[in-house]
Image 1 (tube, rainbow, N blue to C red):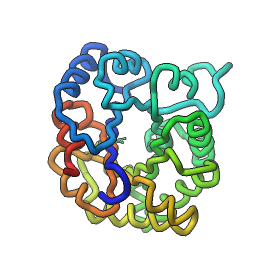
Image 2: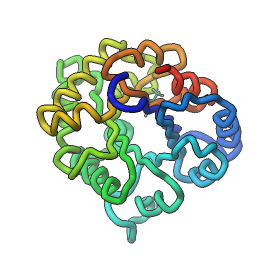
Image 3: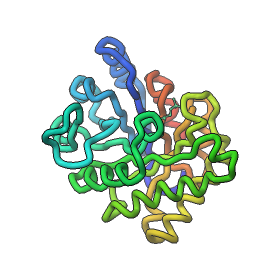
Length: 249
Ligand code: G3P
């Protein structure tokens, strides 16, 4: 941990029912969270309203996706304006499941980020390599190309948190080692320094995602360039998510 306030997001993905989410919110409301950490949860769209009205306001709400422009005739999409209307402060964009399962490309994701920022949402901008890309020695190339697409699209990096999520670590139980994560985080910061500005490099938070849990978070949090986490599976358990939020202290 080094740049700015530690940031922990819980990405609930496409999980939950009214009942299970009621229980999760109540567990989260009963967990003591350290003050000096930004905490965000991203429920499925359908449950955002329920979560917003029952979760302690100390935890901000994120969406898991947003439409690329102003709302209108876009069947099945959710607009940034609607997310703001319902109380979202953040949106996760460029998640590997949207890149590799849904097929979103770098440019489309960059445009989404620019639009969300222009409307005042914070953006959790995800990047990360596939296993075969890592094995082919292309980790940095892939991450830098994804970063460049954001950099080319956004007018400013205010409001962006970068989430490095190696795809091979997501939902696999195979967490990156602290050294593996630190190596990429440091490279991302260096890329920002050279290609955006030293100021943006030093103030932008770079968080890690991929099989983070209550047992491995403390070691990861000690690394200089790991400024927080984006948590999937373990964010569905209130007490364990609390442990991860508090891991930096
Ligand atoms: O966005 C968080 C995510 O992709 C990591 O998922 O389940 O490996 O923590 P998980």
